[in-house]
Length: 195
Image 1: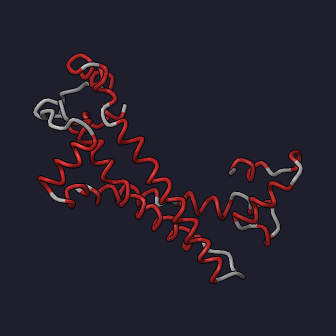
Image 2: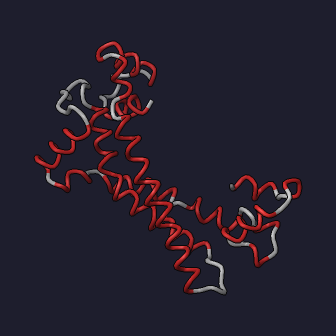
């Protein structure tokens, strides 16, 4: 689906009638393997993205808690922590997204096959465009993620357990540790769904 989406976005208008038509066309002309171009780059890119995102978000919220122990972080603070973590994670993992897209697009009409894999794609991109070439198109990527803004971190922190717990247990960490001590039949369902 990812390959079909990329090719449909890059193709001339009317070249593909639907995603299914695009997939059939890929298989017909390039074989089944064409549907999995860039898969390894996607899988490898998940690790640094998730690792940096979650670790940095945790570090930022823990730092806030250490500096302001008597106050809960507000929604804007959690949103700032989440968006900072997401932005840094994208800076780390974006080159792999670019490689994935280039591997998926090659072989289309008007786009010859020039890369043999991830390492070859990175090497040729750096040789022809420099390090900056690995970050081509990152600005639209930031704009897409700005819509999501990692508000999920803040929403979970602020609302997963707050409605059913006393005020002193409304933080995510306190909620999580208190949740684990409750008997299973009395655990609040909203809190349970957050973990």
